[in-house]
Length: 143
Image (cartoon, rainbow, N blue to C red):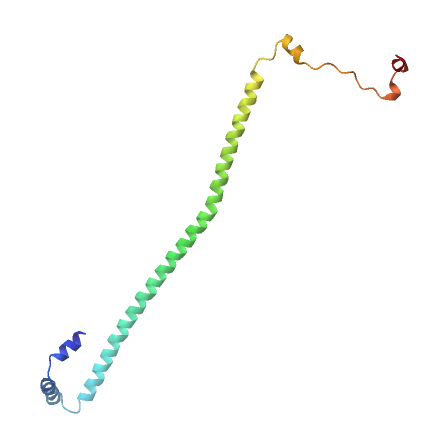
């Protein structure tokens, strides 16, 4: 863009004077060699800038890949850790419930037993033992 602005301010006459000065100063025989050397220099500069741009793009792509890899590793880590944390929380809750139940059982065992009067009221009536038919007395059946 700056080159276009520079050329727009130079008239054709000025360009002609510059070319005439180059022709006189360097001679007709060396102008093609100068143009070739100038072209090579410009090409090398363009190639160098293109290489720099390619290296910057490659580096940014590598950084993006590493960031994606880090994100994938973080996701995998979370996918593994979350179920383990959930299991640990459930295990902790279960152990608390077991502890509470065991404490209740211990309290029930340490409570004083019922007095003999109340235990008679709650004791079941004794049942007759079950005797096989071939061992039973016949006298009992006649009564």
